[in-house]
Length: 375
Image 1 (tube, rainbow, N blue to C red):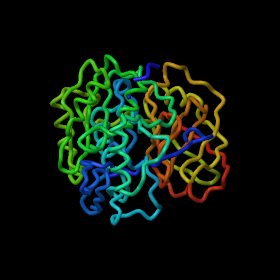
Image 2 (tube, rainbow, N blue to C red):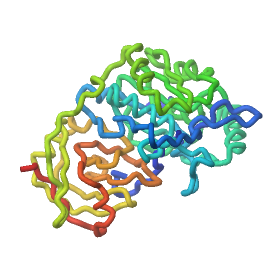
Image 3 (cartoon, rainbow, N blue to C red):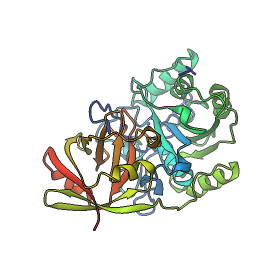
Image 4 (cartoon, rainbow, N blue to C red):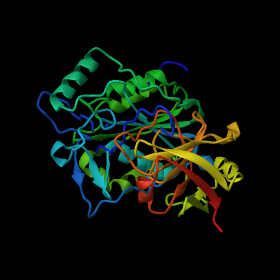
């Protein structure tokens, strides 16, 4: 591969075995400006999670769109009790998200596609002044921080959205690391960003030049405090630049299934995608699954899906996702966003559990789970 490339609580994760297993600094000046993704907005009574927080995975017309984003949350080791006083996240429907990820999910709701979080090997400091100084130093030295290794294959995508917080009127150096590492030459590359009132600065032109894009439509810059209510703004922007993947509000075709764990029977659905339909042919399918990280149960399978059906993966998940992971050759059920929601490998959602997920919190560490078509 050619070397070229708030906070929605993306849970940074070093996923070593299961295989199913971010707040920016905006205008970083000498005076202490507010952090873009560090704007904490708690609006439990009025905010709603974007529909994209539900699995919107991989109809065939979605697989050529990739939505990449960098966020301080997911790249910073915040303490467990981080809250509004530290400006660590935005809250919607009792979930915490980084602003840039929140925008990325709204884009996915409108056009589909796969999400990918840019992660640096070394976390960024939690202290604002230290972060500001580090960013200035990285920019002055044109330093490109090393990224966490990923099996992302950008050659499968025609259109790539790139999201980021604006730091010192520019693109964070981690985004340039991504553009240096992944070859986007000849693709349509679309920037979007969050900021604290100073706009996109020179970041759009930087993205255009560094990505070697064939086309780079006008980007979208949203002030951090407005992200929660930006759904119409995002939809109108996508319509204006003419990028469409699926109709807004279109639901993926799904088939009802049951998930049986001992005496517990849960409801779910399996999607009408090529991979999901291939796996459905093995139902009823019983898998010995192990709990991992307080967020999932995973287990190996003894079949190998055809390669043509393996498009549409990503390294993030939604609660309730039933996934297949080609790298680790297993299936998983994700039930909780933890401190590490970002996976080390890609997983492909094939369905989801629609029943109460709290039952997974009290299961034994290893259980037999059977997936069947609903009667």
